[in-house]
Length: 74
Image (cartoon, rainbow, N blue to C red; front, side):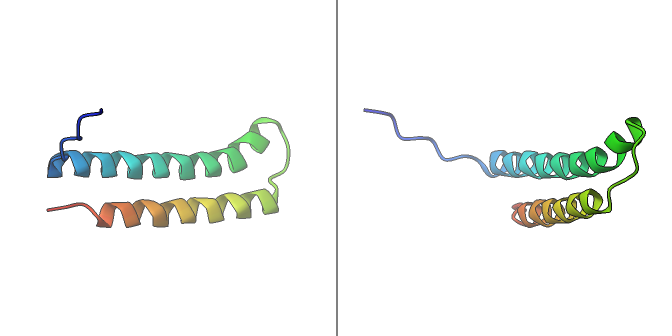
């Protein structure tokens, strides 16, 4: 039988939340970079649709990371 898990400390929970928020931020930035830099690097025109989708994804990930950061414990 598995041992019960030891409850995490407040500091550990906060670090996990900050890591998740940083991941959300990185994913959001990656969407924008892919939508803008990839066409430029390939010599293509920017796609308004792709940029709009990337911007919406970026904003959604920003909301998600702020939601996570609001849960940090003092």
